[in-house]
Length: 156
Image (cartoon, rainbow, N blue to C red; front, top):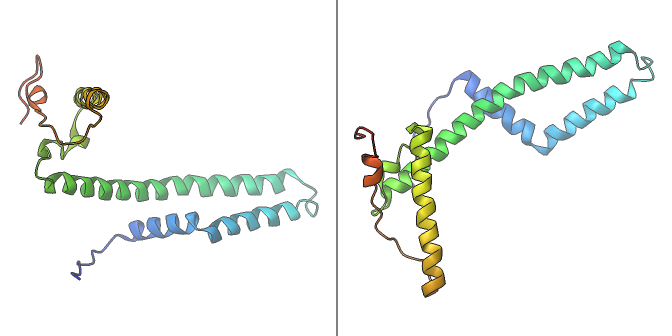
């Protein structure tokens, strides 16, 4: 089996991945539950004071604030990985349109035109399914409509 080189990551990236894994692990959840139970158990000791309530409110706010950034970093990384894997599948498929490799770079208007095109393909496939009982195969799909859309300059 081929071994791939191990690429270094920044300290922040490693911390973000570790934190996301730990927070999503059952032990992480149990630790959070134990903290809440310990806090609740100390309520009578502190007379359920405003300070006692402020401790949990401040703690959870700080943890939530920091987790937003750590989890967003992890999601950005995972999203990029999935996008690259999808791009590779498109690239490797002989009949696939390589023009679809960088869809994340298209404008919302271009994405909407592309979505409408594929919606029409799905409608035609359902129609074919009703008529012939099958909708399999890979019909040739022209993306010429996207290359030079009405009123647009050609895309390169």
